[in-house]
Image (cartoon, rainbow, N blue to C red; front, side):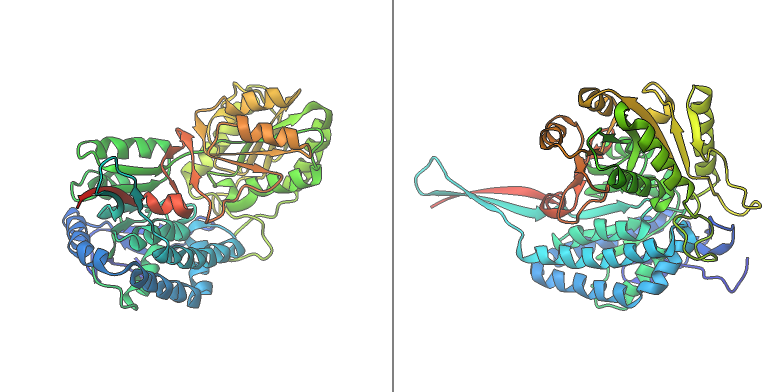
Length: 480
């Protein structure tokens, strides 16, 4: 190993702890070794959970607005290091530098936003049937949260799990993805520069089958908050079942986009192209399949194909003005290539792209791809692609579009493009998804509630409802 490269340590009970076994982290754009992180031992995972539990009661006793002050100070640290953090995210995850900088700044904004809930946490007083009795509903912290992160937006998801947990009085043990752990340990270094009480935030790393399983199955964890694949989410559910541990799971998506004949095609093309290009299509809430009305299908396919073909891609730290970088790893690249091959064998037509990019063996790059002639039964229309590929199916009317959109095992996000208010309202009423975007790109607001149905998950994040996911109710009957 290159001794000049960083070797990170677990962050447990306010101190850094070296590990005996290391996981190497590589740049997916060029294969360069970036550094190493620990495969945290199970004994250190135990120590992290114990530290979080020991710190939790004292943390919960602090006034919520005092807890908010810590979040504000952490947000300031993030902003002060934004450029450096963005370059680290780009190097280990592959997103373009501009998007990485957006992720860092949005993370700081999210920490500040969640801090403001310190003065907004509410209980209830209920009317009693008995004279002289008051019924109070308190909201109290769950205890210790296990936050298990994905690799596609690794830095923002730290805040999405940490900030609502801390403001409601919980403590947390975070495990980043083994694909993108470095940014999380750099975050730990920032935490160590603050006055955050020890044990409130702990960071361990390792593979899901070991460290992830240990967190999910531990009786000292009160909620597992996970973002990632359905398969991993199912394993976490099984691991947590023995302790009846609360779960908050954001899993897969297969977001439909319905484009009607009266749509602003320029807007639809721009927004849907962005969905397939942003983060190289590795975004669970962005459009993964398009249903376009027959009257405008040829025009839409021509325009979106031209836009996808014009996408600039490569190594984001070596080339300027790129729209997207590589896929995360070889397995991700192989999956996308196989899904496109299967779709073509099933009758889809490649309009643009359709192949692994020729980059002289450097990185996991796939051409931006448009597939026409797709049908609902095809794998490409039913399973998550997680790459820069856009399958398109022609429909005759809104009824068909809604029926096909809902015919899916996932239910995270959806979108529709139309100038007709009645069509838009029908979509609101009849699309069976956690979110619907009308005439705009698929990107949620921090004050909303990002949640899905069916296999897209359990619970949700953001806004008031996301904050209260980290609490339980305590009803008190006071007779005087």
